[in-house]
Structures are given as C-alpha cells and as structure tokens.
Image 1 (cartoon, rainbow, N blue to C red):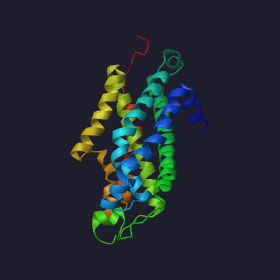
Image 2 (tube, rainbow, N blue to C red; image 1 turned 45 degrees about the horizontal axis):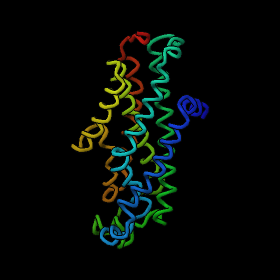
Image 3 (cartoon, helix red, strand yellow; image 1 turned 30 degrees about the vertical axis):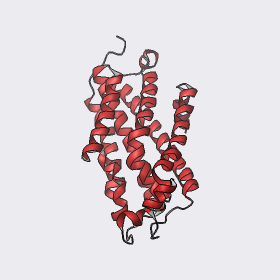
Image 4 (cartoon, rainbow, N blue to C red; image 1 turned 180 degrees about the horizontal axis):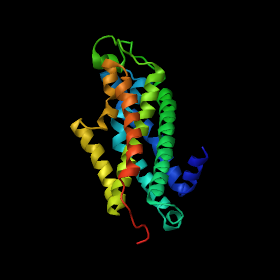
Length: 252
C-alpha cells in the first residue's frame, strides 16, 4: 500500500483524479448504451452484474480504458526515468526492475479499482448479480437454452481482476520495452495500443485470451484460459525481461 501511495503521489494529483473519475463515469455510460437501455432490454433481454462484467472486459476495456490508463502509466514511468532518479540506481538492471515494480503496482491498483467500481455500479444499475437462469435474461437470449455452466461469483471476480491486471501489465511492459530500445515513449505507447487492437480484431494472439469472456455464456469461466494463463504470462515476462534488456544512456 505504501508503494501505491508513493506512485500516486509522484504524478500530478489532477491527472490521477481525472483517470479515476473517467473510469467511474465510463462504466455506467457504457452500461446504459450497451445493456440497460429500455429498447435494448426489450430486444436482447434483461442484464445483470455478470453481463456488465463481460461487457466491460470484452469491449470497453480495450477500446476505452486501456488507452487512457496506459497513457497514465507512461506519464508515471517518464517521471521514474528522470535523470535525478536514475543516477541513484546501481545498474541498468536495477533501473528496469524498479520500472517493473512501478508497472506491477499501478496495474494492481487499477485492476482492483476497476473491479470494485464495476461491481458497485453494475449491481446498482441492474439490480441483480446473476439472472442467467431466467428466460428473459440477456444470457438466455444469447444461448437460447438454459445455461448449465454458470460461473460462481468468486470465479468471475478473480478472472475479471486477473484479466485486467495482466492486460495492463503486459501492455505496459511492451510500452516500456520499446521505449527503452528506441528512446521514443510515443512509439512504445502506439505499439502497445496497436498490438491490443490487432489481436482483438483478429481474435488471435497472446492477449486475446483475456477478452474471451463472452464464452462464459456457453462454457462458464475457464480457470486455465481466464486465470492461470494470464498470470503465467505475466510471471514469465517479469522474469525474462531483466535479462534481455540492453545498456542504455539515460543522460544523453
């Protein structure tokens, strides 16, 4: 918690509050637009909290949330790469590990915040946690039969939080690594956004697995795909990146 407080205190409080408020406003707006509008409910069924979670993870996260949060993390990392901070580090690897700690903490903070705010606002707007057994539910309208693999609340909660964390961590690491190689922060940011967008449009790739929550209507939550795989990918990146970075002149 102290590390998160230090991170949030190292960037302008106005920017921090703006990102937090943006996410808090985006989720209900997106929910109304895609789920709780009266005409949509007549055509596609009554939504619940589970539907809000899936809607945010499949559509809103990569379209509207990740670009803004990645920009915030870029701003945070730019502060951490200040020459006055870097000069106190013992080695290049120490600098990279420090950046990774910042990425991990900021990704954890936003994944926790987005999960909590989604549950609060999603339940408030729909009034139900899960109605997938009802014949007038959105899930029933999609599958057109009684659902047999309805995920438990803890399963969808963990999968949702882990998916957000890993998407943020992996994309932020891509951003930082390309920035490290090219000395161009904007290039790292654009590369991370492009990779996320292409994988979602093509429905293939290492990150696309995090946006397959729509399959929960048919198969429930897959522990391997939605929880273990994202965590394993994050851990692998965390372990190998300190050994593949090259030396860098931070004072030029």
